[in-house]
Image (cartoon, rainbow, N blue to C red):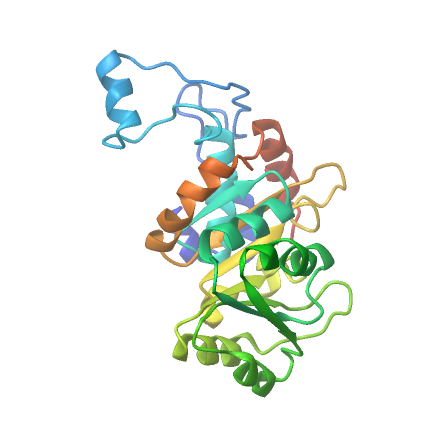
Length: 261
């Protein structure tokens, strides 16, 4: 939404991702509860499968309702694009799977959300990923922990449930000087109060289950990227790992998003 950059946060919340439906003009994005999409011709289908033409194919690969939610949250975070996931942990795991490999190292906030930390310690460690969880409220501890093979610095600020705060800009500077990417879990602050991409982060994640949905009736997650290049690097893993969001989930979260402010 181009005009979003000129509007205040509450107006952006109202309009983000809400482009009127092109078919009938509905200002509330329709629920496209469809697994597959029809092509006008076999040639159009071939072009879409080949990546030569944009358009929807199969909901695991993309869906109009889910795309509306992705556009909305990306706009509010100031990102280049987003991928909506079935849960917050699906978002976390997608990032780990896409950006870590055997021999790589992660530095994380010691008070990181329990499952975000536990899966590194118990599962990714089995495949040769090493890690250090440190007090990221002290940037010098991050600097001490970063190594030549550090690929991710994973911050959560405020942390869940300790509310520990981290200087995102300072830690991003440290990480980037070492060639690492910075991921920030922004669930507890929301895009209304904090935009980590503007502070130097490369990726922002949310558990949409919390403030962005706001009604305690949906589980969901999202990954927001600073650049399209990084999004396209992660997208194949997102598609192949299968953690996509259901269209009805996306519609409910879009509804909840309107009262985020």
